[in-house]
Image (cartoon, rainbow, N blue to C red; front, top):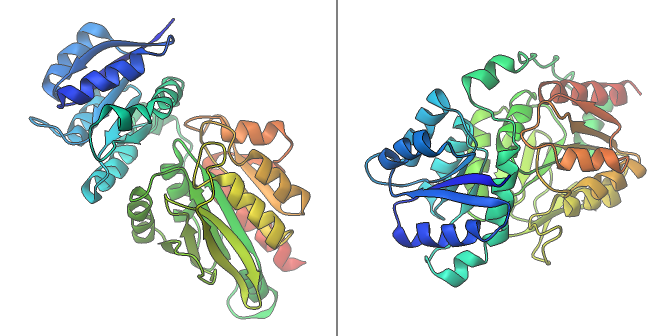
Length: 358
């Protein structure tokens, strides 16, 4: 049975183009297109859609306010259609926190040729949303395990702990649902951590806002990688939306590198590119974490990390929004451990303490 989709967008042109793109897939059925949330509310009642696409900025009621009401009164999978602006990226991140499954960035000009280039991404994200585990709803929060406080931080001072902090690197990769998953992992970690490098599937501009948000919420210093930075303890470096992130060993530890090589697994930044770089440069002085996301990006790179001696862990199915990337990693033998999202920070800290004790 086809997935029933309701489009909510104030632009008549966008509604027509989205209808053409989504309706062109045999497994997707556009059951309606609403010009604003007021009309959408009645259409949801009458048409009972499986997935909603929702514009961020609309008249009468903005998309974020409407999403908040949906998640409170009638939880359903929502894919946000976001504008490529600073405000658009900030509101989109709030929408993902509120419960939206994913988002697609609008082209800067609403032309058929530009939007049709997003056709595969839009369709794939609607399919993923239909099978996603909803987060941010009262029901999901009630079912989620209670957060476990992180263990005590590393002992201060030099010695082996100091060498771990400077010589070890942690790599994290995620896609659908990953903004909230990464946030939950990082907020549970102490400031005294080895350097962290991260790839999250997001377009340019959105990664800037995401890094800024993480920096404000965690004990770590989180930045969007610029390339050429020394990877410092207590810092996390997010791949920018326009480039792959890699690492390179130098005399003083590790440094970041950016590459605008072709997308890998249809993504730039790619998790596989990051993980393979960490495998080659850090070898057994590394830990790899793969979180929720659709597709297979990261699986083979994480396998390479494990084969080089790194410790690897994947998010379990029950806590994933979309159990795609961790499942692929498990299927190729890339995972040393599997854990719920809440347990991953504690497992990571426990692993680093085992290294500390020798």
